[in-house]
Length: 110
View (cartoon, rainbow, N blue to C red):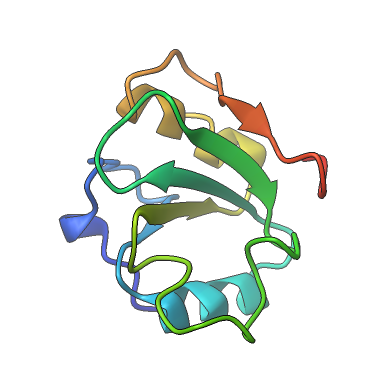
């Protein structure tokens, strides 16, 4: 696993969260190992306006057929955790109240 916790734009210093910034291969590998997990999709630049919760199996964030860099190398980073409780702190680090995601994905319904 090559999550880039130290270089993520939002400092989430909780060991239960793995941040992927510029590492699509590591991110997709994490999804394969933790299909029961959760993913928070957030803007690369810290912003309280876009903090979206997904299940790790969501097709909108887990397709290996997309262009390289599509998930973590452009305008977005991914914060992953095995449980919903693990990722509940991510919104706080994006400038929002705890567990207040801007949206829960309508496709995977986490």
